[in-house]
Structure formats: structure tokens, C-alpha cells
Image (cartoon, rainbow, N blue to C red; front, side, top):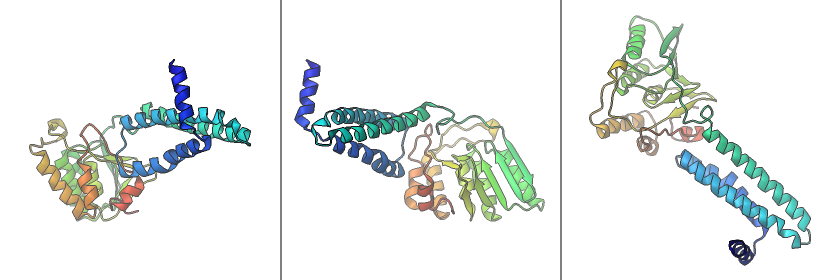
Length: 272
């Protein structure tokens, strides 16, 4: 009964297989990139989108197999079948990446804290705490010069990051991210007059949490709205667009917004 109704529904559409396939291609390779460039794409959205694409591919495959009534039906069917299968495989690989913790942007393995100095280059790996700020400050105050600051951090104390950002700004230090710079680390990154994001570098933004970690030198943020408003003004003062700066804290603390390079460049977050 249901099978007959489904066939009747297909017949009422009177579809052309090529139109369906072109629609799938347009959604996959034109509309999706535009959507991802404007909005924050979550794992839930990716799953829903994948289900919709698989459904469209299934419908397109059925339409393609029914298109033999055309004069050149065999060629049309072959083209449509290969295109639909190709899009299905591409979307399957994309969905597998979402659930693979070692490939997904959601997976963030722990990093040991380490701050090192090599000539005029400083490198940070790990969370930003008062110890990191103190090490950099003492290095500069003692007369050493830092030209480049390589950041690889998931964030940490907002107050320590602000202090580190002040040092970067006052001493005109160039900031570089080759891997990742998330949460409060981005405050340090944008403090530089010249900020570079490597080919594999990622910047991650989200709202603040009210709970601090005393062991890591973090101070509890008692007024989140006020603290976030302060850093929105700071981002804007560093040349970041107003729209982007206001978008940073619209993402939940348990989530992470990792904008595309072009989005960062258009917003004035990166220099190149």
C-alpha cells in the first residue's frame, strides 16, 4: 500500500532526472559553501544536512533510472547515476569526518603547558595562566627582545590573556598561529599589529564561562556580560569588524566557532 502511494507520488511529480541532479549539485557545491561562510555550522546541522542530501540522492537515482523514456535515456541515466553516487560518497566522507574525533574540530586533546624562548622568538604551547604571563613579562623586562610569538593554546585565564595581550601590543610583537588558538588565546593573537594564520592554523571563539580555575591562575568572572562587552570593544579597537566582534560571544561556552580563513580576513582578524 505504502509502496504504491510512493510510486503514485513520484508519478505526480513528473520529474526530469537531470533537473534533480543539477539541484543536488547546486546545493552541495554552491549553496552549502555560502551558508557555511555566513553561519556557524554545528555537528547537528551537518547530520541533518547529510540526511537531506542522502534523501535527494536517493530520489535522484530513482528518477535517473526512470528516464529511459527519453530519446537519449541511456546516456542521461548513466550521467545521473554517476553524479548521484559521487555526491553520496563525498557526503559520506564528510559525515565520517564529523564523527572521527581525531579529524573533527570538536576534538581537542590536552596539551602540556610550555613557554620557550629562542632568540627573538617565543613559543607558547598550552593554557594561558598567570605563570605564562609572568614568564613573558620577566623575559621582556630583563631586556630580551621578542619579535615573533607563536601561539598554540586552547585558551585559559581571560585576565592572564589580557595581560599577555597588553605586552604583545606594547612591544609590537608579531603573533603567529600554525596550529590552534582558541578562546582567550585569540585576545593575545589580535593584540599584534601583524598577525599571521598558518595554512593549518585555526582560531576558535566562544562565550566566557563564570567558573575560574585557581590552580591555573584563573579568576572567576562575576559579570559575564560586562567582561564580554569589554573584550568586544577591545577587538574592535584592534581593527576587527564590529559585526564579527559582536558575533564572537554568541556561541555557547561548550561550543566553538572556527571561522574560515576568508571570513577572518574580511573581518580584519588576520593580516594575511
